[in-house]
Amino acid sequence: MTALLFGWVADRLLPHVSLTREELLAAMELPPKPEMGDAAFPCYPLSRVLKRPPAMIATELAAAVNGMHADVRAESAGPYVNLFFTREQWVGELLDRILDPGFARSTDGSGKRVVIDLSSPNIAKPFGVGHLRSTMIGNALANLYRSCGYDVVKVNHIGDWGTQFGKLMTAYTRWGDEAKLKEEPIRESLRLYVRFHEEAEKDAALEDEARRWFWKLEKGEADAQELWRYFVSFSLEEFERVYSRLGVTFDYTLGESFYNDKMDAVVQELQRLELLEESDGAHVVRLDEEGMPPCLILKSDGTTIYPTRDLATAIYRKQVMGADQLLYVVGKEQQLHFKQVFAVLKHMEHEWSEQCEHVAFGLMKFEGRKMSTRKGQVVFLDEVLDEAVAKAEAIIEEKNADIANKREVAEAVGIGAIIFGDLKHTRMLEADFSLEEALRFEGETGPYLQYTAARINKLLNTGGFGGGAALPSTRDAGMYVSQASAWECLKTLAAYPDAVQSALRSREPAVISRYLLDVAKSFNRFYHQERILTESGPETSAKLLAAAAVHKVLCTGLELLGMQVPEQI
Ligand code: ARG
Image (cartoon, rainbow, N blue to C red; front, side, top):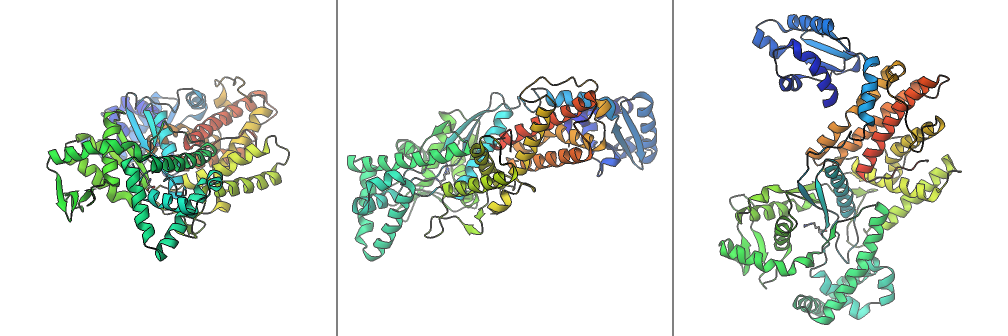
């Protein structure tokens, strides 16, 4: 659907029908094939009012439109009126719109603050594919919301608290090595964690020791705190390296520990509202009405857990950060957890619980392997990134060995391949990620899109419009750019704002990914069917304008997804 083009058609139909513009727009359809027109209007609704056969109305309506407007042509086809733009007259206008800096920006979200919980890996555990997906999907959503005028706050809710720290401290104080921890904090923490579990099988006393350490940490004892801070800061540094390669930043990195002193108030409020019930020594909120198992708030030893922390977090995001909408980009295996948390908020009379939304995604396998912390199955993200970049570099070496800054280009392409390989699938899909496939330059990949953009860039440079040089006027463009392939390409470009709206509504970056593939395919059809750099100056300029419009939409879209667009590949 292209709201812009449909709007133009509707304006031409409006004088001839007894419908409001909204009704007209709602009735209009996209014809199944481009040969059938740019828009179609079914005459059934009018037929009901006018009590005449729809085909008759279609014939009359087509004649009326043709009699009054020269810039669209109407053809009746049974009960339908098919409408065609007179391309020569519209191409310039369309290019003007697309090249306008305001195109693809909206202010729909102005004055609304969206807090997005994304990435949120756990300290002392590897940064897994789930966290990568959350980072990429969350980052793309943040860009989408921002492009629609929302005030976006990105929060990395680091898992920096929990009983695993007790285990880690036990292992570190027994077998740890400071130098190793500094050098490879995540790998070393994982080694210690795995060793703890191996040794604890033989020696049950280790579990007690771990509990003691965690207890000391919760009590705020200095040695435990110091060790904890040590683990956290090293891991954060390592995460930061990954984020900077991915080009992702956060407005806040607030660990779960940040809410340690904010949970008492939640528990007291639950007590005051008489929502807490005892169950086997623990305290829960019953959610029978919602058909869900009870939400655990306090364990039998009185300590708080994950849901309690998320209650305090949501309240903080609403009341202190001023969120109007709270999104949680977290794997779908946590669906019940979020449903329970949102339901408890509702029981607490927080009407705004309706503004909370779990943006879930499916588990992704990496080359057939599930990424998990379990022994032997860990795939380290930095290794994956390195592998992608090395492969990209090899391909570039083969394709275009003498480009400048090969390393940077390889980094952008390799990482772009991973980002796009993830974001091209609808988020709930349980995809299997193949690096080789994601790196193919021909295919539905990030490199294909980056390469298309680079190819256009080269055309623009050759034609003298590169590097931000002023583009020619769009006035006569329609004289030279009215071929079917060019027109289809421009129509695809005009649908960019619709793709953004749809992606935002469904919280689905894949809508943008699929759309960008359509853009690149339609441009490549145009490019293969028409010579762009011709002998005629005005013709070349007109075609380069169309190419510049494609370049703009491709770059804007890829940036929304969080990808870089190298000038040359
Ligand atoms: N650290 C958690 C995990 O890896 C994800 C946290 C998601 N955010 C939240 N507010 N619960 O499972």
